[in-house]
Length: 494
Image 1 (cartoon, rainbow, N blue to C red):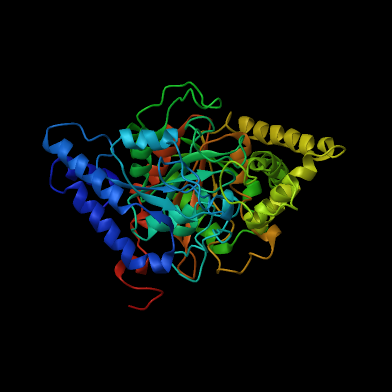
Image 2: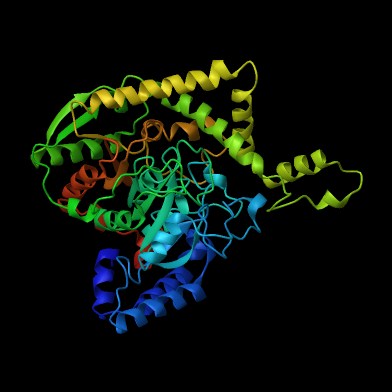
């Protein structure tokens, strides 16, 4: 069942939170060996929380808006007393001493914490193959990647291993895996959800958001996690609306923009057809569709891969093995200097993709290259935001493919960083401009792999985003389709 269905049944005592939680862990036991979506599980803690929710309901208390529903949290978000590894060797033994604001909000909303999900190391990747703990698999085809970096969260939702999941999105890391796994992924406006307690990758781009089975669950989860937080200096002091009120089947007179730059070379034909069919359906519901232009789109990937690594090289400088995390085994050698310890720890603790991005960032920020690379990339970022500002003067929603292709096979592109980076070509711009975006299922390719439809809106207009997504969803059944894995079958075999 979806979260909004379970909340009602648990509150009415038709089901207990403990029953739901035990059922989820039974499901995890059945398929986790194939999917590998988890870094750590918290069964004892989850059952304890579920029993507390059930006791609260039995006593007439309020269980919260997520009362008793299991939630999986990406392993770069802090949960007190549990490991937060970022799927990296360098943090393999780090236990969080505090809750992220999102974690606290989920507790207050009555969610049941079931564990931490796998991700690309430090959220740097598009396939969840760079994790120190091994690659996560796509439930629709276990030979394929689930997307990244929030691949564990998306795969777990698709495989029925959790009801709700939390991810983070720096350049598409919620929306892209949601597209590949046939689920819903929402990146809120930058500043709408607190980043306090999220391990930073690129601080001006990172944003936490929901990954769910449908749009209604995304709205419900947004109600739990959105809002101002004084602990986050980038959090915006605006009241968060009730997002569930946006769940109406009505797009009459909504102005839809189709950017011509998103339908060119490199776009898979099956993906394009599914997206254009979705646009026709939305237009048939009364929306007004027109073409728009985002002329600086072609520079987005290049600008992103200067800005994000630059911020990463600064943020990841703190991991030196002195205060916490992994430390080289040779640190007690009297012949090693402190610099030697730093170098060995970081050399042994970081994976190849993280090292690549640290080096890219450090180079871009170095003396003599700052103006040529970092400063120029920031100027391009301003132009990209200006493109969106002008487009949103004419339309309410911009619709694009979420990704240029569907999920590919594990190992197919991992040795070609440029091809991996180009996977984010349709999602990166929203992060550079700070916009909200959502990916919803809109069909399948010829191989039976899910296709995602991306909707973008003006800053802090998640309500219109959810309204259009929900309206489309109610006229289709793509979000109701399940991989064979959920039906006891794996890649066509029982």
